[in-house]
Length: 254
Image (cartoon, rainbow, N blue to C red; front, side, top):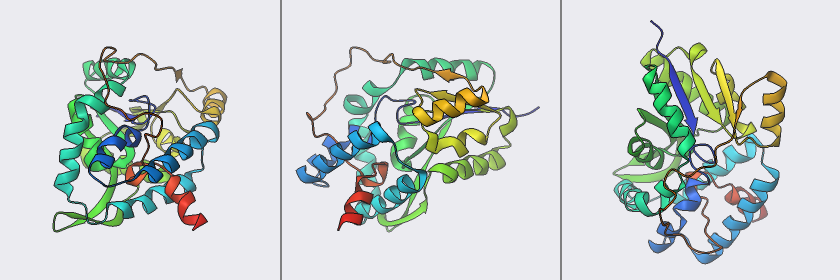
């Protein structure tokens, strides 16, 4: 019997904003980013949300951003994510995708989060929400610290390749599996399964979904409507390897 699975993108699909932005306050508190970096990241996020960005731009930005993790202890990252889970990450989760997760599980299907965000952020969030696992971007680690070198960038075709690898390892039949995403840059990820679904799609993904007859869903209801978030006003934003492309712009301008 074929093993089926459902794959959920993270930012703006499973949660309502960038996971990187949600962790910005925590990174600033630990001295990893400053106010100017927050301002640049916030400006880029406005541009990105309004106009989008090509797959190559997003991939290059994330790979460049990995350099910012150089020297950071992996355990420090894990502690940061654990501390931010309740005040910053859980309040961003949509209810609708978790309802779908429950339905997929009822049918005996496995469920995974797949994101450009680094593995050490995606994985604990996925496990917290009851997923079977997660695929995120991988940064090389040596002596318990990030080197800043990219091992796997889960963007565009890289995200599709990661899903194919997991499917081969776990015996998952992608032809009968499902994928959910909001971005046209995830077209390779959506196309790798037999049942692609557009969620809160950007303009280009909506056009493609309508042309190909893919389902289009809207997620809007927070899972924890009364939760209070610990967020910084206005300038909450950080690129890092977590998916914010402002660093690509910054490096090209230097």
